[in-house]
Image 1: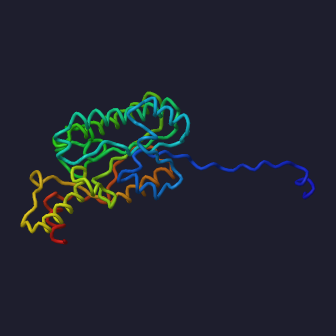
Image 2: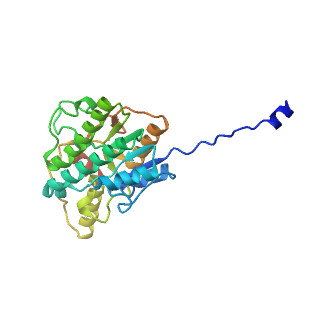
Image 3: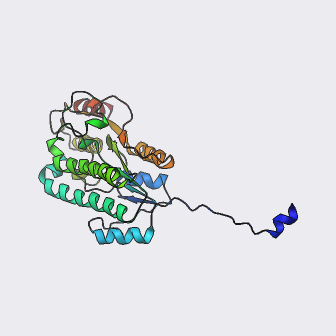
Length: 266
């Protein structure tokens, strides 16, 4: 037996790592994904210009990823969304459409798009909102254009799967918070960060109140962004191809409750 093995040439196959591309790697979720996928590609905006289909095609042809985790988006706070709805709609539609189109053109086998809870209808009969209710009503007016661009991405992915047989999917996370939020730009902060910022600022200025927009009645769910990153890793490792919501619990808390509770804790 030893002689036969010695005379026979044996091929040894070394598995190459699953090549992953993450768009929006410098964003809040993207920075957490860097910790969970250290070997993945995290291109800068200069390296991968998602507003240029030629640039996207060139990058994918060169790097040949097997999976794209698409987190990139033009994001902003409520005031920016109210003041610049066209900018938010146009840029996000272009970003989402072109990365998906290029993934199909370059035969990328897997694509995971990160949508948003704001894509859901503003008013529903029951909570928590279920996946099949995505198109049962219009999104909130405060970020209507951005929300529709996120909803459109879901439609594009579903259409590609139906017509082209791709195995692409999307995740719909609830509201996120993280230490990687835009802490230096008040206009781009997510709700929890913005709330903390307003409380700290009012404390420094010795104000006796803080100003929040809306009635405080809308119900929301909140999740640490790193928990979403962990879910994405589970999806990748188990090759899960269906689309679904991501939230820590079934409970929904009002904006008023969250504001008063955080104010009490601080």
